[in-house]
Image (tube, rainbow, N blue to C red):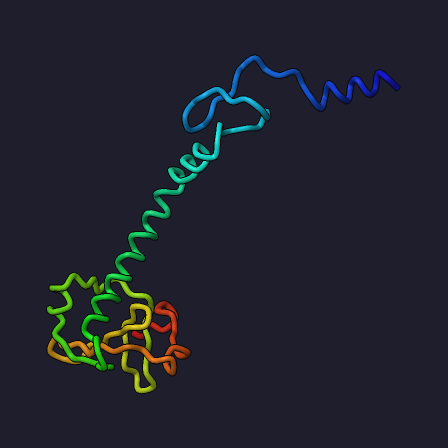
Length: 151
């Protein structure tokens, strides 16, 4: 019975290698658990931030553009105005990015609104845009852009 126990211990805990592991961030020699990868929380956090920076950077950039578009639309609706008509070039001059929006909304009569969260615009004619704030009554009718494209 003693021999079996010794074999089990040897298999479960093999001899430590002479090679010392280093922190994946700062390359300092690690002390402690054998499966340790980082010397402290700072290094672990720095490693993970760097690892996911490209993915989160793109998302952060798109969110920034969406919020900027919303703020631009909101400036035209300050006060008690629920809708306002402006020229397309006026929005462009303020830095509005027409390619970035959250969704589209179609009214019952087929009129298309391009939305940035709770603000929207609709193209009228001669480069005129109607800007409006979406009310809670219409919020339940929102249809994601890719599901409502019409030819």
